Length: 421
Image (cartoon, rainbow, N blue to C red; front, side):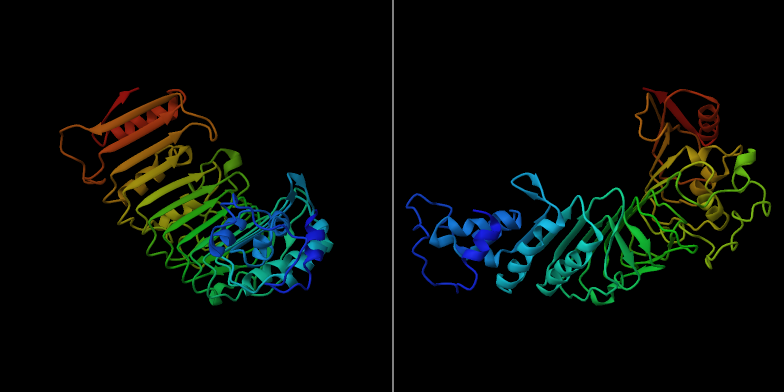
């Protein structure tokens, strides 16, 4: 029996009514003998279509699907691909027949869609919010286009986790002022069409592989943030406002970052000559702050800072470098070591007074290093220019080339002695 047939069979049948065609529960049906609240939870792990079909198993199961604690609207049915349009009629029935019990989790996942599907997906998303969903996942995987979410704010005192993938986000939707419990937000492979994301409740934020064609910086304001992941942003780098509670952050400016030094193509290192590149000069864009990234994450205890060569943001930020007063572990890539005088590396070390571990990954991204060089201090007097707590230095690379030798020489001048493994 299909899920649609099952829904039609029990359409209008109130809970508790008899259906002689439904089999009695077997004496060996141990799962069916479990309490309702446990079965509601178990059914929440099934796709909605499969959960509904359980109504024909026995009288005990007739109405259990109506009150599941989770709802999975997914593009698979018995492992066969299902498109949004294939589930429209089924979902129309389900939304009417389902009990208005609260939902812990809702997942909406599809590999294909068309523009006619957008109102349905938006309706299902709003239904989840009405049912006080706590964890909401909307994942649309279509290589050709993004699904456009309606420009209405999310109003929920219950939503704790929001995962978005493959959707186009507009200004009002990301107004999380009414989502006072929202602690976890993940935005992956989305089109960003807003200039600010703000939340006082957010604790964990991940923005990966997203793109924006705006000519201004997207401002991120999350003063209570504990962890941040900002990777492979396509467009102008977002501006990070103060995050005083930040524990850990990973910022990776990929080749798609549009903040490119105009001098880099001629062989001049980004920011090496003040005022010669209008991009590299602070205040040359819409950024009213001295720092785009480093100022906002300066309170972190653990940092991973990676940039493709030729991008100017980190180097420009360093001209107004904040003090990383809590920073204990720091991971940097080759970007920080290509300047002739190693100014970027020297600057960030100078401004990290309690740093305990430094890792330099000087090998191509996506590969594994062939050589790992570990350093430690000798017993000589520690130079005052760097943290007196720095006990572990790791340099990972493929070969010992000119840049590696320059880095090792620089670190040795700080009384670090290396061993090869």
